[in-house]
Image: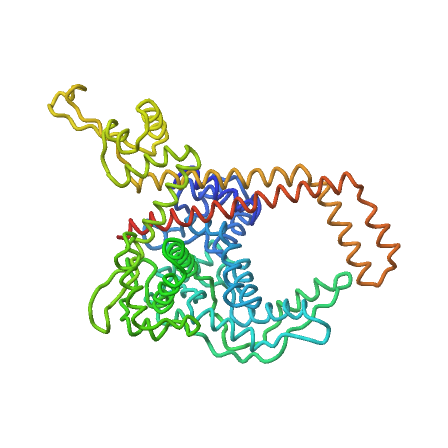
Length: 546
């Protein structure tokens, strides 16, 4: 775990959970596994506050707890999960993907589960139905069965999964209440560092039968103290629906698999054409649930199966499909491979090879943006030829010697290019030594990944600074918007509305517009950098698993 990762994790924890949770989480990231007493002593926080912070982290899967390393009876130890905290950065992308695939209902289901860490199916269905009903016209409401159907589809496609039971994760049942009493009611979403898989327990993707009948309820504006009474009434509600103790969480690996597939499809469309990308999309769709997240390639599929599963709108004849498959197999990018001849040929998508090519294109793009097209030409040349002397680089790249020398040294100083010495004699005399320039893609990807973490952290800090500097103006704007909303709900006159709108002056409006523009740019930059982070992370993890 690097300093940049810890810094970014701290900023994400502070923004989403507050300073106290950030202090405890950052301390665990730096110190490793610790028991409750040690955490309290080293953070100088009260025991109750540390317990609450640990409960929040455990609830959201950002912390796992195990029995002590000193044997039975030793205190429970807590360990922060850096990878899980970094997933917070990708929350908007998860929600947008769910909206694209399953509409507003899927979007709200994923949003609720991300906000609360994990929930039961019945409480999720109720909450989402109420939120959808709130945004519908008067007299319309959302049926619980529709939300349940979308929830089941998300489970069927493995975007949601059950949290593993505490006992099945290898942690004693007494470990949780000892130091985190509030976490005892929740399942151990974070008991194990690794995310649960279908192989870990048999009912990971089994949807329980709910005895939940009804429609979403529209919330009324609460009077003074009414919201507190409603909260108490909700806590005391003991109605059962048949899924008590079965909690659900978002399967991040499945979302990452979807993002990877979309990146591969987009790359094929850019390299070849739309029809080729549709064939690759069909192969990936047929094997999306059966292929594990760490597999080097998809399950083999015959040409006959691919032909039957192609969308009817494309209307591709069989002989044209065979030509496209041959074209994809012969392409130097090697996205598609052929593993056999039965059934018209057996084809797979080479996932690790595709990720390596995507990472290579990303690194080349970064070099071109930072150092120019000529440096990118030298970088691509070294990637292709592996080892070259400086004179060979000048000749192959067709760049004057002085410029090529400057560019090579610039790339070398930024660790994008490495210099390898091959001596003719054991004394390493410079006159009798070959100096070869080369590019190691994996270390370069790791270095650029750390630079991306640093960039995202800088963007978040800048956004927080902008918001803090204009805090008074933002609060004033929010108060005015709340007053306008209440007046419109009560049917106020246009004159009253215009009077309230005039409470904020023209210069303040202009300042607000500039602030919103800056914040939107920073948000957009965060999302764009995260796309690069995802490609590089996927490539690094694929090389480690292979």
